[in-house]
Length: 277
Image: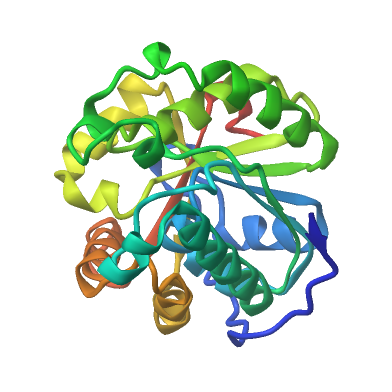
């Protein structure tokens, strides 16, 4: 565990707190205040998922001196640079850890907790298989539950941001299911749209996945136009994994989800019973 990281990076820009939207969505400013004032747990299946999916929100709210970044699958054989891939999982993992710590400093996050599990690339999946596999058949499930559930509870967070598993990546589905099964009665759990995967599917399909397959209700629509450059800067912190196409997909999704067709947003969802918390 690495704690007491010093704040750094993006200038905080005030959240534009528009009125309540359809689907029970609350004011963006309420969420920013909640993250600043409380204990926040950011659950990331892999290094980079938080930066891609809610990096605009964190740029608005930070620094967050009581926030924890909890990353589940931190061992990997995959990296964009071929030379890094050839160096092997130990070197890839060390590079990813360095990137995570840099992102924590950039966003002023207090604590980083890597769980050290093998990601899909080390469990025999290829690029197609990791997006089509049944998570219930993956033998990593018990180890994931053993590692993740105590970590979720130990942080005593009042707000948890976790993946909605849009796109069906097996690692994201495993984490999504584990967080739902953990039972966190003292915390409000908000589910983010997994990027870049959400940007790779038509918008109606993304909404169907969230509302029908996951049973979620739109809770927060956060305007991030004023901090897009800061979000992109955070994405490129993960240089071992981020390319221009990934950034385009993330920003394209943010822009198409803006209600008036202008601006850019990040959306967070909740289970119906938590939508009014």
